[in-house]
Length: 219
Length: 241
Ligand SMILES: Nc1ncnc2c1ncn2[C@@H]1O[C@H](COP(=O)(O)OP(=O)(O)OP(=O)(O)O)[C@@H](O)[C@H]1O
Ligand SMILES: [Mg+2]
Figure 1 (cartoon, each protein chain N blue to C red):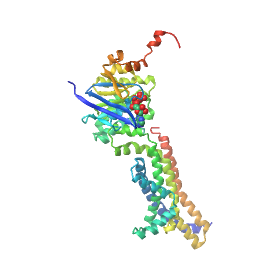
Figure 2 (figure 1 turned 45 degrees about the vertical axis):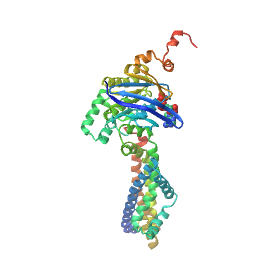
Figure 3 (figure 1 turned 180 degrees about the vertical axis):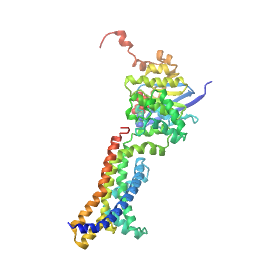
């Protein structure tokens, strides 16, 4: 192992890691928003919108992120939607993650007894208030383990960003290997940086999961 | 003359081809306590759910002139993610936009009245069935409904907890609240009711003062229904099977 090399290129990896995290997290935030909208549409069985959402979910879950990114990066500009590579990365994660988040939240929503809705209605709540104050908090706490799994999955998926020439961790590693043939060092740094990003997420996730297990409110 | 607060005219409710309620006429005065009894599956819950607009109706009308209606369910239906106090104050604060401090004060007073002041910060899962049901009643009261519906609110409770819930309801009756109560507790019905309604086959088969109804039912069907709750025959014969 050449430590000099490692020291020299550490800042490059740091920069790449910041980019990976930035795009990954931004994409995940949008994925959660997309998932929320889709899950609510499915839960209330909104006509037409429901068919569109189901179609999107199948499309998103059954195509690789790489293909989705190519489509967004190379395909969309042809119909007048040009975005920067970073924006494409965010959009890709949001597109892929949206369906996973939707499924996670939908099963959470469906685990709430329907009579809770009636109970809320009897107290005078309209359907938006019922969703916001009664159904959603319960659904989210049931969905937390699935959310955490999805977040880790999506952060790992960012490794295909290099394909649209985003200078993320994977790109940096490939670049250095290509330039200097320092394969061991480059890969070592790659693994370390992914662990630095993912381990805290994973640990935080299990902590939150333990807190909300069995939706054990008040325990 | 008493003021009419709720009027049900020719209420008809079907599930598929099955007619559950077949032209029910019923009017309720302010401050009246009406107990609805009848065999299982006769449509008591359906009647309450229609009154509370939880079900669409197929014909007839329910006139409540904007009087607010509250309901207490057999299975309590407290919100598990909220403390007792938050369960009670959620709707008054978020829906009715009332002053937080004032609502909280009212909630604590009501909790005290049902003997649960010390449970204000507990979560539903930390309460017994009887305690949960008393909280559910307080929660319904706190939105200040003018008509309260109770659907077999003691049916899921262990016998020793039934009384604590019934006492709360007797207290409400004494305060002059308008209530429609579905129950299988016949002694309680006799004590609390101003009027008893016997529902069977989608119709109101008999209605009257509780004393009359329970001691001298006029119809055969009511007699047969009430016999189910009595062990007099057994005691008379004194012989086993
Ligand atoms: N959602 C529904 N879909 C179809 N049928 C229903 C539905 N809800 C109730 N029913 C039927 O309507 C009839 C009346 O039901 P309801 O629950 O009102 O009876 P009930 O008098 O409250 O009985 P119980 O004393 O057992 O609570 C029953 O035959 C029941 O099977
Ligand atoms: Mg019932």
